[in-house]
Image (cartoon, rainbow, N blue to C red; front, side, top):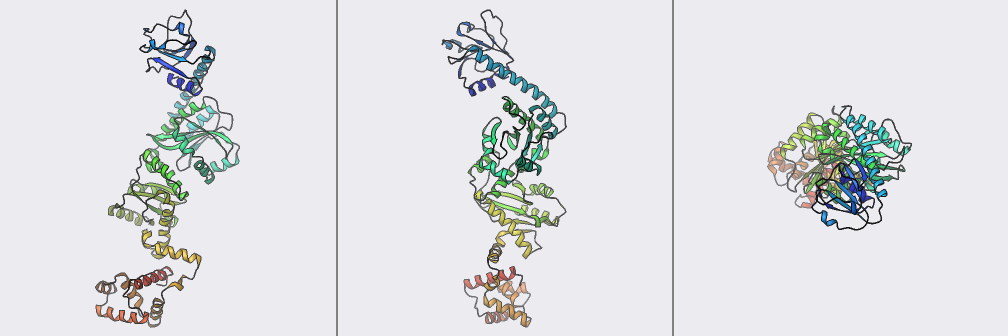
Length: 515
């Protein structure tokens, strides 16, 4: 047992002390004994308990540790000694302290023996499940490894706790909504990350205690490992043992390239949390993202491919996600409710580059995929709303323009408003400007195409040459048609409000598939 570990245990258990002499000593301690007057030889791997009158001469050159109990003494004479003298407060007996030290050494020997078995399991090449099952045999309680998307990567095969809620959770392969809400409410992630050892928590949902520790790769948290106190109570040394075991889990997962190089997956937890909890305070999330190496820029976009966006593709979601992450580098991504979601972060005046958009469009078209892009936003707590924007862009885009591959919500926000209005009152056709309806009926009765003319006119106001070119007619023909349109609609088209009203009415008619 490392000497520093023993000192930490002593402090945690109320044994306050002060060290004099060589502060750099940190030997592995194997034995402990009470020093007697006849003792002459010292071993660095042995801890000695003594009284002030039996302390060796300050000039002794053997680097050992001595715990000194009893009456007060002048320990400052040992400040420059090569060994270390540790003085304890009065009232502690040699027997009491010796028993505590021996118990600690016994525990660490058990941990060392167990770690030897687990290290062999790690290097056996049999994978994560074998390592978990071996640890389950040693600890005697079930163990679970979970990634940041709340997915169970592995769980003990031989032991299942008798708890209906937990069995339902684990049978799906994911922690469910209640479990996630419980984790967030109790801030378990934050508490675990703040500690440097296994964290004990009594889980009210399953009425059992649990040890939780982080799984890290190159200093980045990629998941958690937990052990339930279901078969028997935890032993005193389980906390330290479990913490060391979590390091082996990290080593095992590091063998998997998807964990080693897929940084986006490490941040998926945060994206899911943002989508699931609209308006959630994100100050803590921003800071944790920075600590983990992801530095958000000024603004954000959401790119989403919902089910309808890949329903005609031959690719699986996981394959699409894996390939698209190379096109959208530096993004956070996740599969959420059968929707592929990317969170893009850029500075205010920095959009997705033309090259990125070109490559994205080529990939989407080649694989029969359709993606929606939200408006930009600045506050992470608004992510859920802009996620809905990106999904809505695809749904509305397919309804109105099925041939595109990328749909910007900014092009469809009026249609989203109409969709919302239609749910409240289905007769939105009554909102169409009367003059435009007259023109629509005139075309139907006379076989004219004045509706095409007014649509192009509204697209290019003040540019008759562009309008005529788009309609493939002469300028004089355009002047004649516009004169006729003004007569039918009783509108001069000279004021901005008239353009706005007619444009909105065209959007309504397009939404209703009248044009």
